[in-house]
Image (cartoon, rainbow, N blue to C red; front, side, top):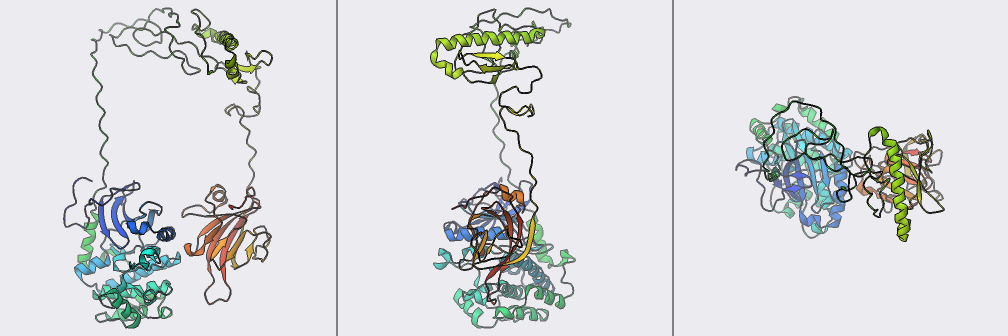
Length: 633
């Protein structure tokens, strides 16, 4: 972009340490920075603004972070809700990993409260209801946000937008966090996070109560101070709800219960909001925010224009060549035909492409004159090019004598001329082959066609090649070519077999695959068995993995069509799939060593209270749909 962004706007000019491009995105401005990286404004090729988060280099160097970041980005791309900023692009494998989300033209809740103070109770109810709907979609994709805080809630004209869902998990348990780097904001953590216990969707509900308290009072429920002090109060003390409006007390109190099991579900949060205020549905989004906060949205809509690449430097003008004055116009008269000069070995140009006659002459530099040869260019007519040989040889041949069969002939005699040419050229080649012993073998490429359509076939007695005309009406112009093949097919190309109909799919819903048991796709009915003789899909609860010991597994990406054609064409083979990296609804192909194909949809694991350990899957199978495959070893 040209120039710097004016001071006082929400967009910051790019500094010396900021990149100018991320993958194919040109950066227009910097939007801010956080614990995991910097955020920039860019645009899609169609001109839509996007926010691009570039991960910090120290995180990018951690292999465990990269692995988790890739998993979380893949899961986040499946989240498509009205109150979330969707992830539209990402590259976890880049030197500095990055992801792009839709740009939301509005301040964060943290910025709005810091600049304008606490929000009215009606606005807080609408805010909490929108965040709760966002959490429903996020949790439905198998993601726990883990870092729900005011900075990750953006205030748009039509409601809140939750961002950065699930990304904080990528930094958990990396070498950086173990060395003292804190991910997440202590003031908005749940007790189980502070204690290092298991994180569940109830963790986000506790954070939602903290966000609601902050929005309604302008301060954190457990105060400020050192992170250790704040985390201790979160675990052991009660929140300070002074100043919380009466209509919000029940909502906040229930969300901030110490025990996760005592907190309301996201659906119950929505019910509480609707009971507290009948207008919680965002029917008039332009009025849901206070005027001062809504005014900020207008300033953020005026985003800097997308950078325009500088035009390429203009080519240097060609040196001017003095032109002779044009001749005065003359009345048109048909020119008399002039015999074409005969070519000589010294003046003959290089051989043109097969099948073409003499190249057209360039325009002369002198005054315009009537053409001297019909159809030729203006100026002095060029010497006609020799007719090409039937096919190019890797050896040179003597130039033909003047007046030979290569002299241009009139169009009506073209076929006779072609035969004469072929005989003359072949005779020349025979002489050259006899004179140069070793060159014969370079010429003995049998069954070729010349540009007149004659087939050249090797003579087994003498080693010379003779032109042979194909019989009239014979479709087999080349030996080895299927006579039934279309004339457009290349010589020797096999005729494709008739298409084979795909096998009918069979769908099996709600299969509980117990640890140690197997599925064999050819079984009818398809059910888990404790038999390793035909092991197409296996669940190992000890490693928390689904395995395909005797075939191949392919995890489908977001947007890939789950069908037989995709499974046949995709080649990202694996042998097993860790369940900690996928969410409910994830799909993968299984190609068995017996030629069966299955698409497996992961529907979740057994609850911790169940004495049995199993995964629930839906399976669609196509029997004998591919060639038998071998394990990836």
